[in-house]
Image 1 (cartoon, rainbow, N blue to C red):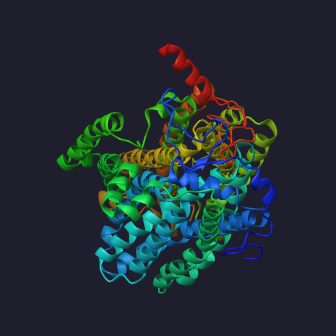
Image 2 (cartoon, one colour):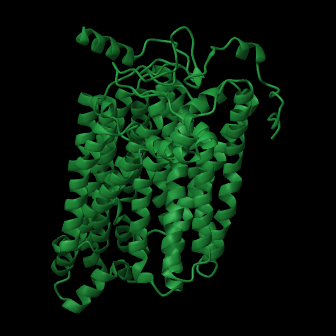
Image 3 (cartoon, helix red, strand yellow):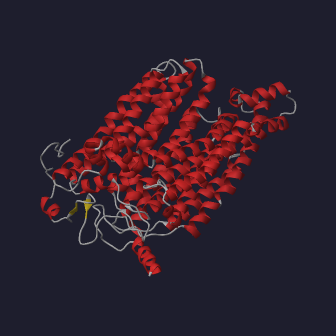
Length: 621
């Protein structure tokens, strides 16, 4: 807390002279302005958007922060990412024991599917909330969701409590993930953003090693404590961010750098009218339509993924849900074009090559990755148990996570030095393609340890490059007001890719593994084949040279080969899209290149949107 004063005092590292020379404040818009360079994106000629409350608050806060308070904010970000990553690698393992404790383990797959859908559709909601009420205020909402979710899970006595806890937790989880990305974009210029994203992800490396010890301490008998622990840790770790943001907003108001938002004014003067304002700025109808559409599409994918059988697609309910999901999407587009005053997905996004390329790459890359990843554990349990120690298997499982974090640092550094990202993106996607292609051999029964590890490293390195570059490429081409929405869309498309990839993987596994077992173990009867199929890891107790295990390894290797071929074919498309479709903006000392403004909202260079506006005006003349 040193150096950050809460109350009426100006922070000790606050440069009052430079702030007095800052650009004047436009009371009508609630943001900074100077000689016609207002931070107002409501330019009909360019089709851009009006600055929102969340952006106005953070840009005003930028003028109040000094070195100490800014460092305190980044410390808070680091703590939030640490607890978020620790949560992600531990608590999912408690669900088996939670559902078993209430006698409803058979429904654990359904609960997991519901949570996955909330994580996906919750991203646009959290992005709009952060833009409508502010970053700090949304952090508070996210923390409340976490606390309620973990308390329900930790104290669950019925499957209903578990389902409710999972839904609330998923809202908090997806919100914390998204807010971290948004605040980093708020606080960093394009040139530095890649490095900051890389360093903030480093807690995943540490948690890859400590997660096993933590999980071992809480399962099987103390899983409730494992949930309750995070109900305490999350608010404690998020608290520094919330305090720093709220303090900065308060100081900015005192210095008349920030005026009350339209929603805040409505709450004070016309409480009932404020509800209408809130729903309009949230684009509530658009959120409902897109959430319903995605839920109806993802639910049958998730449920079918649990069984893997193609018979699931013959169920009338699944078919109806998919048809309704696709039918609702045109309704969403129609609403966004005709009626939405603050659209969730502005059509100008579809005209931006960097955004559409980032969305396509995120979706396809995740499809390719999860086609193989879903059954990776089963493959290694069958083929490597007894060959590798438990510790070696654990280290291998964490190899890709570590590579994703470690290789993001040189990626960010190259982007900082060259001020470009397109060549790095193409290189990373080609490296990922190579890693997937080599898996066609290494995932077979004759794959050596070196090949297996190298595949993980290549995919991790390529994935790190792709994740950092696509995220920044999508943010670079939009105004600061649009950063939250475009970030949510990129993450959303990745989640949809995960669902599609998992479904493809489950369908291939379920419809080929049984027949592969029959081919490679012709002496076994159908009952024995069914047992090996339903409990594939049970064969791991047999000696590595046992004929049944040898046949099972051959069967699983043939299925994994098919999965790897499919994943390789899919992975061909992202580098092509990146090379021919992606823009290569210069990563300068600006928040974005669309309007060429810095972190304070001041115009410092010509933006790509300025050229679009000129062209639009010329066309009208």
